[in-house]
Image (cartoon, rainbow, N blue to C red; front, side, top):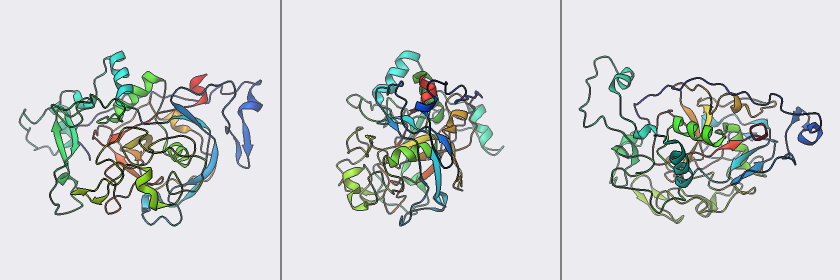
Length: 360
């Protein structure tokens, strides 16, 4: 799922929690547990932004859960983390919402920009010849819906195709459109594009731990957003049923991507955190799971949205409509993969968060 077009973002650091509390609000804003003070309940003087929900601050189990047969080493070991409360979008950012951003700013996504071979060739061996100009055209990765058979499940190029003209407005390539799909998650978004939207909306991407906290809802140690029952997966999330990638039985009601809010929300009203589209986070991807056991504040505030991000992969969470037990089984809260900052596909989107400090 990686493209070869690399981007480098300019450094800007956003520090939050400076001057976070004033004396008149400190008792109202902060509560404490045995590892120090952290924000649990939403302060009464802060209104919940439209389309968002408050995620209470809590201590919970981050990473692979006991009894999860699909857990991978990158999700281990499970460990206790504590995170401050924050607001999160109840759905992934939709085509309608992203269009409002583009209309207001005239922003052009990475998938829409001309390909610069002088930049691109630096990622290849020195002797690599320049491809024909007919190939070096803007585009993105699109899932091949006509796969007849595969020779190796390790070779993802059998079901992914670089498609000229594919972008957020033309998700299947030239000639396709999002007309009538305003309520679908926006896709073909690179990391840079998500950051630009965040800056415009006064939001940021969640950290991996914030994302897991939101996915847990009122729970603290669940495999799925609804608990530990895998038998109701098709009722709760848009995933792949049948033989991946050649046959999708669509028992969950959708063959591929679905409109947001097509399935029931979790216990605090958040939709589609598992399945449908992968969701970006601000954290850098590492095969080794974090082993934080003490207070872990919302420190994406130091790394996201207004910051420098080099070409390292970033964590994506939640799985997508392509996830199947026989392949990735990433429709679990602890599951994660890495995404290059310039990667765009038709099964990766994002949602945003806001902290109390951002809304003051």
